[in-house]
Length: 300
Image (cartoon, rainbow, N blue to C red; front, top):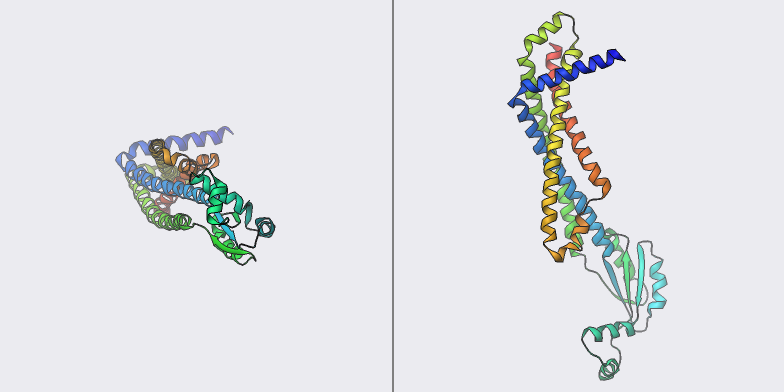
């Protein structure tokens, strides 16, 4: 056990020494990884927010089903409730709908308004809530085929736009992440390679005294991982500051605070997962970059 701690202490000291000697070369690698992880983290967070907003919008979206004059909500509602995509069915009779309408118009004499028109001009209505926004178009088609249904209406433009934005963001995130990941790996590899070349004489001495390639170059691999972890930590700090600034702006918009703030707020799991993803991704990028750098020297 003591031997293991001694080796670990040596590796950590050599890693810290290499980082200290790297100077501004370290900053080149860390800053590149930071930019990569900041953009990746912001895109991932926005994707989560849009997905939650889409689900929230979809769950609140109701399909309005207007029945024929000779059809009744109490008769059609059980049929609608049996559809798997339906979560809830609210029955609104034509008498209830007429009463609500005249009240909204500010008419106090309901009977007088009804007599002027001769009869209640409205029909029974069903408010149908779907499981999610994706099934709404198909659900509307099924509802329109039910006997006694005259018209099916739903507003899906906002949901469609958010879904398109979500898909577009995912593709853009993937493209940018791939490009910046390759760039970060290249910069990390070059930085580690320059550090190795700067310590070439020390490495030659270690080789002469019998040190193995793994033992010699492992601290450089740790340096690459340190670049990634440091970049991930900085990126997460920037993302947190950006999120706090955005939340302050939303608080100044009362009309959005009830819906958007809830939709854009990450869950506790996502809040805890985001820094772990950034640190893990950064460590992988640093590991791959450092392995590319030391592979050539280890074989020579």
